[in-house]
Length: 420
Ligand SMILES: C[N+](C)(C)CCCC[C@H](N)C(=O)O
Ligand SMILES: O=C(O)CCC(=O)C(=O)O
Ligand SMILES: [Fe+2]
Image (cartoon, rainbow, N blue to C red; front, side):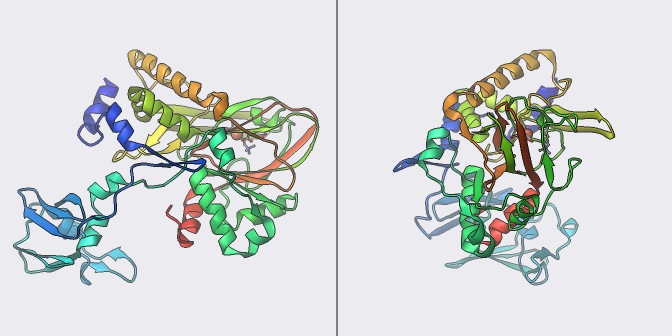
């Protein structure tokens, strides 16, 4: 019933994913020894000729090889004239609630570069044609919000992605930009040569973003002393997972710096969740869809000495943009997954089948990247994408790090001219 309602609500907006669609959505382009991945790239505009037609509900515009549809209220709402829009602050002046919902232009004219609409009350809006193309739903549907290279162990290793160097990283914007480009493409990136202290680790993160304070603190520095009620604070192996799945918005970035390890084991496991999700999409679109639509809970209940915490996060395993099914966040933590009471029994079985398929993909040895973190080597992980885990270990092992706010990482990337 519940799922039926969800399907009903989304039907027509988010169409069920067919196999053919799945192969349209993702495309592999091989270059040398690197596999580049995009969510379908739009061809550059082939022609600049423009055709338009006023239809009952919308304006149809054919421009730059794209047929687009613009709703009339949308067009009125997006008037960029000085009275409707403040181009100094990039904010709308127009009060949208005053727009007549059945509005239609009284007059339409097109020149080489612009569309002009005259509205019933006499106001004229000029739209640049390439602005319209850039901002159309049809264009958005074709492009990736976030171009990325999904990887398994071979793809990542063969790409020979270089680490940033601490000195350069702290002083040179090009080094920072290179680091962020890698981080956005692969969901992981390293800085080497960092002094093995909590302070220097904090300093390095401040180039990229702001620390996201949680109940674990700002910067944390932990060892296997069970000082907190979580297996992270033991010597046990931890299977691949994303952290803080029990937050309504899981932390965007996780930073690790191993300050000390006198013992054996303790290697870090990294797995690109988007690669595995894509495998599921290619092989069994129905399973992908279930994982993307069925909300489940994750929970953190801590009751150790003076730490009392109870966190609950609700959301699907795969979070996708409905207009193009691009995955933007994975919540995957079997340790912290809570009681499932959000799904009726017949769908729950199908959900377990889908979850099993994703798990099987995530556990394929060829998808595992193992690294030994050493003092000096700081690892940044996109916690919405790349899973981490660790091997069991012996001896004293001290790991410091923090979470970072995702918006601020993307902000830094954009300020350096990267698409993020
Ligand atoms: C990183 N730090 C040690 C501070 C916290 C670890 C949190 C572990 C928790 N099970 C989770 O997956 O979110
Ligand atoms: O000890 C490690 O390497 C990582 C443990 C872990 O998963 C965490 O702290 O989030
Ligand atoms: Fe973790």
